[in-house]
Image 1: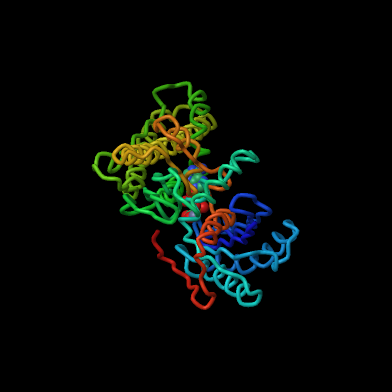
Image 2 (image 1 turned 90 degrees about the vertical axis):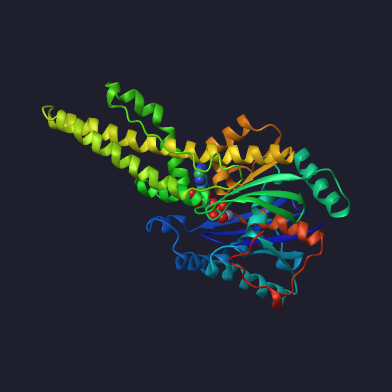
Length: 385
Ligand code: KG4
Ligand code: ZN
């Protein structure tokens, strides 16, 4: 039995978890500074670091208490020491070093993105069979070859958008990535344009869901808003993405529709005041929702098409979709609709940053004896897979 304490502090989530044998979650604690960050419309690195400092020791103590363990009972500390925000990563890294030094514990260093990949191996719910399958899978793999790989991985988070061919545990080939903004970052920026709160992914998804509702409120069909956005790099022939032009296209599209609406408003001047503002409100909400919907469609369509192409071109049957944007319901639907093969997408709560995925990835590294001396552990904010 191997018990790993996972530490995640790469961005705005302090995640701590204690996981046994790479799959049995004994405890998990998460504290996010997202509400504080929302006031600034995005992540303020210093604020993220400060919140990690305030929370990390408390969360470790709570996690140990809940697992009914003492720190002495833990076999190793798995820490995400990159990539991410320098100051934020430093908090988790220093805590891991300190525990290792004082308690004489082993450290395994986990790439944050590798952590996301391992979140796809997490058992769904409390399904015992699945848990056993995952354990035997990881254990066998540490001993001898199994035909589990190659596997394609779509990593879609706030900082990364990559298609990775996973040839084995620990062996990754990045075959495509974004040339500018990451998918999550694009959602966050688009939400700002539409006046929706941070983080943008969930608020765009919520707004997009309201479309059919709003459409039924508009009696005059000619007033329905139509927003059309491009599908960037859809036919580029490679597996790369570009999302920064999409948000500019969104901005222009919104401005165009707004100026059209102004004309409608002038034509309606004879209506009594409250009627105008009521219909305007509905139109405004409709514009935001239509834009949110179309933006989400554009991002999702490109992500799915490129991933499908990568799988077909390379004859890969298994796919994992991981990272914060993997929580997007529309992306999940479209992946299942369009892609043939075995698809692994983590539960919603394990898509975004957490300590569990770091502990699970750490388990594999522990089994392969990939230990790092505390003196050698460093923050690697630009660490590539
Ligand atoms: O993986 P993650 O927690 O942090 C990074 O490693 O970056 O991903 C955070 C990103 C944010 O950009 C957020 O807007 C996006 O994931 N996100 C979503 C959804 N939930 C979170 N994007 C689209 N739809 C969602 N439901
Ligand atoms: Zn992440």
